[in-house]
Length: 215
Image (tube, rainbow, N blue to C red; front, top):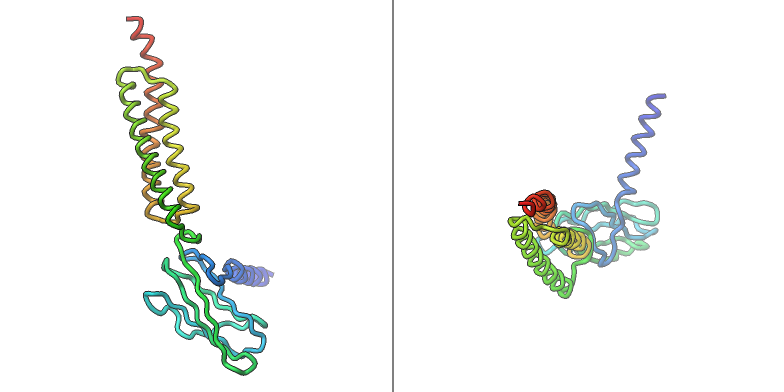
């Protein structure tokens, strides 16, 4: 009984490895380091071989695909963010024939943004950074005078949320891991400068102001 259960679990896990690999097609964006299935329909073929290459060189050279009845497949995991060209050859009805297509590989599996998106993102980034610097300097000024209020806290938290929103948008539309890492670092730092410290300054101002006035 135990052997049957182990065998069923093994077959289930083995089948999941094929289910988890998405099918890749012509000009479809793919995500780096994610498994994809390259497929080619041909019920009459006795073989189909494919080659995959990028501008940096050949990745696969004339490797055989797997016959699954009427469709031939090959599971492939791209490891570089480049255009991947696929060339294949098979014997359709006993006659050699070829096919070719390509797909783009990106960091997040989404199509590369056009120039307008990059420019808009850059402008938004500059505005948010300048606003963040202004809000934290303003908070420091009122905090020293023990005059921090809820408006100052709201400005700083607003700047923090704007950076967070920009990070979310970058993961969806920009697809640049370096920029995402930079924004994450800013978010971690801004949690202290734009959320924690302003709240502390507000609390201290609320406690010390009545004492200051009483004196």
